[in-house]
Amino acid sequence: MKKILVLEDESNIRSFVVINLRRSGFEPIEAGTGEEALEKWKVNPDICLALLDVMLPDIDGFEVCRRIRASGSKMGIIMLTAKNQEIDKVTGLMTGADDYVTKPFSPAELTARVDALIRRLGVDDAEKSSTEIVSGPFLLNTRNRTLEKDGQRLKLTQIEYMLIKLFMENPGKAMSREDILSAVWGSDFTGELKTVDVNIRRLRIKIENDPTEPEYLTTVWGYGYKWGY
Ligand code: CA
Image 1 (cartoon, rainbow, N blue to C red):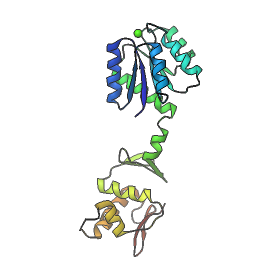
Image 2: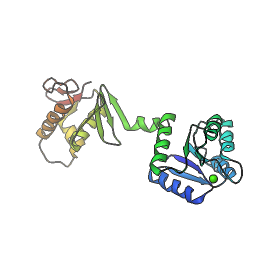
Image 3: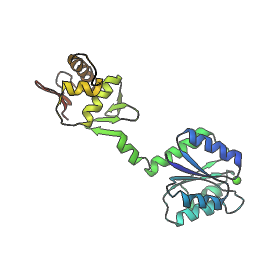
Image 4: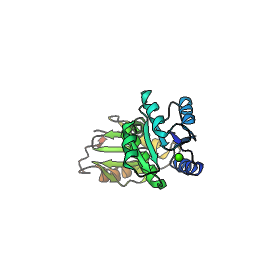
């Protein structure tokens, strides 16, 4: 889970932010003062993004931002500013903040900004590469269980999804009907091998340009199928 530093001295705003970040799947690290925030960051060097309130009882949010940047950290920084004043935005961006959100903000607005910044920073890349398989015009997302062809979402049944996942994970490998049957339907499935052919035919209608001349999911005569792309 991605850690997000939440520096805010007003406890009701802080818990509101914390609850919403948690709901969105982040791990919030809370701090009520600037010094505490810097301490927490030392203990959690893997914090990927910080939400910094400006007006604080000790050092202000800009100073915290400046110190984080002075250490060479590339973490995402969003300033939480109470006043909708141009000066705050300019100072914030000059001290190295990436973005700012003006209070009061809605949970949706905050999470949208956090998500956008994380995407921009590429923090998601490692995660993405392990959940996405690209092959030719196809993009399979194993977290959402979705398939796109040329950017267009294709509607698949669960069986079709499992079939294409099996093929895309094994490009160029000839797979027998028996292999496919046990991988997709389970080894204790007692149905016929024809089940495989029927479902491959349905899948081809969805993924191939011409299902009668398959280019991607090709037939290995007398044996089975392979992802031929
Ligand atoms: Ca404050």
